[in-house]
Amino acid sequence: MTQYTNTISTFELLEKFPTEESARHYFEKKLWDNKPKCPSCANQTPTQVYHHPSRTGLYRCKCCQTQFSVRNNTVMHASKISLRKWLYGTIFNRDCS
Ligand SMILES: [Zn+2]
Image (cartoon, rainbow, N blue to C red; front, side, top):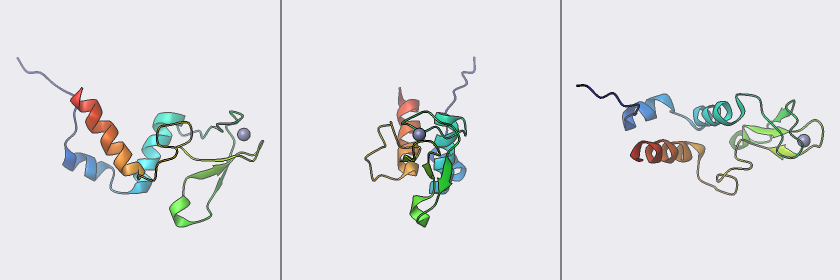
């Protein structure tokens, strides 16, 4: 009897998420369904702002002017660890359980 599992190899993971931006898109889809949501007022029509190339994915709420990213209200919020590393850790921890 063949048992199928929903796992992904390290190579597949590196291929699927080769950049920080690809990891950010993954988290934005997973956490927001690609509709950025202000953590302060729950508004879903933010303006995307880019102050610096490393700040891609930073949004500003049109209602309350709060700046936020997909890291807000998550364990990743105060972390300087890249989203790619968070993604790899998330996926490998999930597959180990
Ligand atoms: Zn807001």
